[in-house]
Length: 286
Image (cartoon, rainbow, N blue to C red; front, top):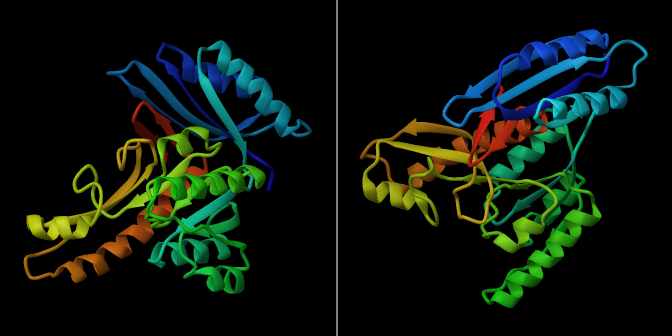
């Protein structure tokens, strides 16, 4: 199948942007496969995702470069990607392995268009599984309780991210808070799965918080990590009903199923260039 290009663009809303982007692709011999757009009327921001096949014989990289120049002339910020791209991804995990295993199995099954380059953890629990079952390098990076240990661990993780050309970092129930200093230096976005329906029950032990509050719904939230804990732009969420008869352990079991599904969808949408983050929210083109 021919390589297609996807562009995610956003900028000040003004008349004619849809016609002009479609017109540029038509004039250059391309064939549009999908196009969708959204206008945030309150912020005056126009957002578009458009996917097309370049004209026969035309190099996709040339088409992408020229489209970016064209979009910039419209006042748009733009990111382009090829359908053949397989971004390098790193996965972070702690002792709870449900989200980690689900993500790795989906990747091995070909559901996630990426290359998982390494797995890192503050525990050595999943080293054998990573190396032997998923054939993926594993890095044990202990994190002690003192600030110096945490800083050293983040320095080692950051070096691995840079050395391996990582384009996405996934926190698959990595139970460490990445510092603002790390996130500011990290060359890749970070997706985290939080085990509650944010903004409710941020921070530690959200299932215990939910049970104590007597909620009738629990949820899971995948979001981009930012220096503010559990407050980054939300990519995907899901909920499930609960009752007073269910214990904290029941909530944990039910919630873990939600966590796996929500994280996998968020990661796949990001890899397929369906997510555009601006301000502290996202537009997701499903």
